[in-house]
Structures are given as structure tokens and as C-alpha cells.
Image (cartoon, rainbow, N blue to C red):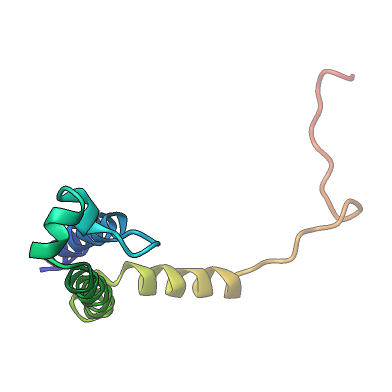
Length: 112
């Protein structure tokens, strides 16, 4: 289920990029792609802008909802909790390091 949601998020993100690239910052947008003024009589600049704006907001909301829903369907392996518990156990099992004066002399037979 998790991979399906992530795949859907990626697909919607690609569609969002295409919709944003189809928009024109000056207001022409998709109507200019269809052949200029003759196509604007059929589709209409205002109608095209409304459609692209609604698609943009719809894709943004869908990505946000799907991203938040992944929190509820994330596979719970429990590895992070186990690692935290092991780290806590290791910290409580510390032994003092002996100082240089407390270290035992080594048996060095080569210096005799």
C-alpha cells in the first residue's frame, strides 16, 4: 500500500509539473499552444486559465493529502526502536578507562 501511495504521489507530481509549465505568466498559456487567436475563440483564454488553475490546486491538495496519509500506512518494522534501546543499553554499560599510571607493564622479552 505504501508503494502505491508513493507511486501515485510521483505520478501526480509529474502531472503538476506539466500543468505548471503549460501556464503562461502573461495569461496566454494553453490557448497559445493550440494555434493563437482562432483557438482562443473555441477554448477561450479565461476558461483555459481557470482549468489550469483548478488542476494546479487539485494536484497540490492531492499531493499533500497523500503525503500525510503515508504516515498511517508506513511499514512499521520496529528497527528504529530497537536501535534506540541498544544505544541506551550501551551507554549504561560504560567502564572507566584506566589511566596511564594504573596500566600494567607489558612483558617485553626483546629488550633483555
